[in-house]
Length: 220
Image (cartoon, rainbow, N blue to C red; front, side):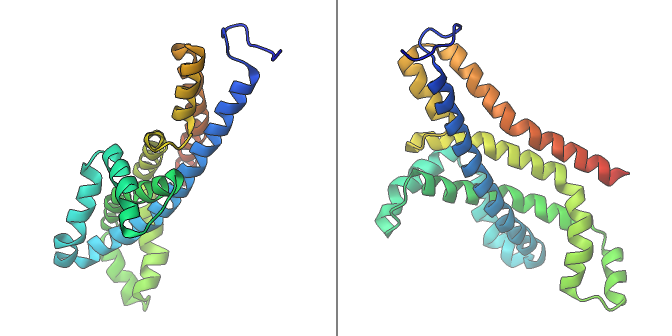
């Protein structure tokens, strides 16, 4: 007989382990999507800033689509239509692709705002000292602009981590899907969702605290 926890009628230690594994899968798909989406979003933000009219007419409307259309619709459409073009991806792969593009669309505006936060006089002064365009971006624009928009990026990252729950509609067993499975078996929705919420908090809180401490260290 499996050991049970007294405050759950049919909830046992193995179910905690099941939720813990699902939390790890949530963290994995979130970190991968946020990392790839951030890199892609920085590139898109730079393109929007430097591309001017061309980027406004081509890239900007495309990014607006991914920002505006509900994420769950993007996930379902991509997962069902990807095989038509020869992309036979599992729920994890489809989730990573859409979450990455979705993240990049959000980060693009953040990145462009960071570049615009660095005044042109400062950049012109750097260029007059013989610094190349790419050195200007690396040593001046990204450090200064990055600090200016870092809180906004943290907000995007935490939002994407929570939005990763929507990948459950594809059958990927992340934290929300695991909770639904256990609710169906135990008929204890309230308590199981409390445990799932605690897992989400455990994943998000260290990130927010680290970001806050990092901002304080920059301010000193």
